[in-house]
Image (cartoon, rainbow, N blue to C red; front, side, top):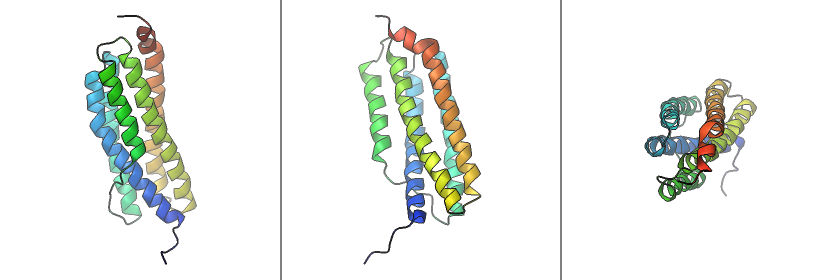
Length: 166
């Protein structure tokens, strides 16, 4: 009979999930930066790429704390969200609505990450992984800040431009 799975197992499993997700996002962000029409959009995606690199490094520290190898586990949710973003890039290429679409895709990704980090923080507390908590909180804070910046960018220009016919 298989051993009963515990919260420890679920924590590591979810850690692998977000680790895979961050690595996929790291690959997607330069494409999004190239596709973005506004300079602010391009700069924002590139800045978040640098942050994502730091988030991956923090996750590697969390793996170390739990004595596991830093390994991702295929996350179909993030693959679906990234595929949706690529679809928008193709279908809206050159259109005034492109940046609004890119921002909405990026926010779907951010919200997924925010949900994952929030859960991992609570589980880390429950499991007594005191040193993991601030690492995960730092990642969560960056994701939330990025989400706010994306909202401001959308409201300031992308959504307005998107309503105009080319």
